[in-house]
Image (cartoon, rainbow, N blue to C red; front, side, top):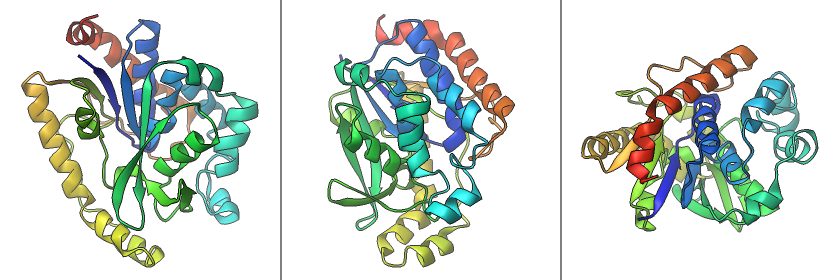
Length: 282
């Protein structure tokens, strides 16, 4: 039995995920591997570095700092979420990311990002939390139109959630057969076609595959949700999701709102803890 943890993205809805994984760490819930997309990657990495509370702490502290996320950052740097601040200044100096622990921990940690030239998802196995891994995290969380394309390992990449919001199939293909899935939307949620598809096609006109991927993103997402619901009903996966609409914006800056959704994640994780332990055979 290989135990996997799958982390959906969702920008600041990811505070829910942070609450869940903090409870897991506090209660010794371990996995053989994990896969994260977008916020699931950038926040989920703290599971492998064993840094309880880090993600909610730095988000609350720097959410209103223009260098972290702002229109000013987008105008000055080309990224709504400032690349230099988010992926260097903050994790290297202000709230250090424990790369040493990350490297030593045996958890296999995978990140997915979208190849803008093919419109397909590519995955990367993180090893040491170094510059290459960090660039993959940045690529996975780089939303189209408001982020620069990230060049890493010879690929040009953007947000992994465009084509693979929940990477459970990737984990299954790699032998993970006991999977816990953390979603950031309430049960029954389904996407509608994105209204920014024409803008994506215009801004990324050099990469037509991206426009095509965005145009059908909602279909892929909804198909994944149907499949996850089916697997959950059969007991093949265990799903932890918000009990209600998190009601938080993708770029939420209010520390109280971030804390509210984080606590929602903690509460739901604590409520489901006996189920998780039974499912994983802890």
